[in-house]
Image (cartoon, rainbow, N blue to C red; front, side, top):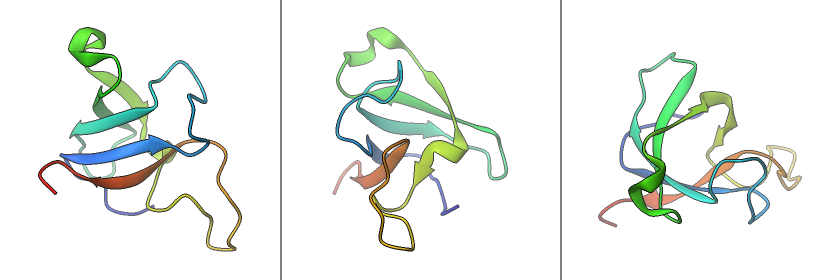
Length: 82
């Protein structure tokens, strides 16, 4: 797993919601080694509040190391302020 940090932006791998979580989120908090990431939706405004998403869902790229397209989880698309 890559390094997850606050202010990173992630989008679902398939380009649409793969579960009840929103399509694009901003990481608010993550404790290294923790099981969940606290994030806020960019699509639903702040009405959803803070979401707790399993850390294993977060990836650095939309493809695997073997070059296959990921179909679940989130991949990093930038950071707030870029």
